[in-house]
Image (cartoon, rainbow, N blue to C red):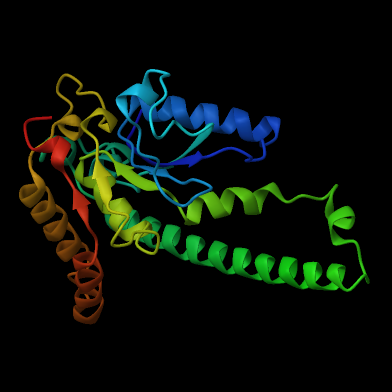
Length: 262
């Protein structure tokens, strides 16, 4: 399978269960993440990643414990130059480089992901406003909004909230996955929510697979590679390139698990 980006949501309990279709979809996405590169986001009901002590991890009475539920949301990386060359049967372009970055279409796909997440954020904000208004009316005795909406719970908004406010963002160290996360998840990334690179999330190395052969190790080298990729992706427009690089500069990267060969 190809690389993927993803989100993991950890909740301290009380989270509603998704429908059968949602569970099947999450199972499929999780299986994809096992087979290919993945970037992941962890989003919880508390909005913060739970620290786990050794005692708690082993079922003991540590000061903090594992959350009752955790949710993973996977997002596949945008089209890479390998994907493009493979689709066009361009063997030379497939083998020309290792750790292929995004294609032009891949850049547009990452930008579209960001636009969709922004649209989702507006939907959630409007939903929250309607809920607050309904609660206010209910308190005045005009409408029992809880009973009114009890059979019409919109699970979509539950998942969107988990997606938009994750506990953590994780990515494969491959350039295509990191670049997708930097461009597509930019509005989710904050000073306290860096992209954590996991070598275990990378696509398994295939014999002769140029796209599954890494190049850069360590934060500086990986970051420089992503910076060079973004510079090249926006080279046709000076203003767009400047804006993209300025936004990229605000992204934090945790490559502590990729300091050595991965």
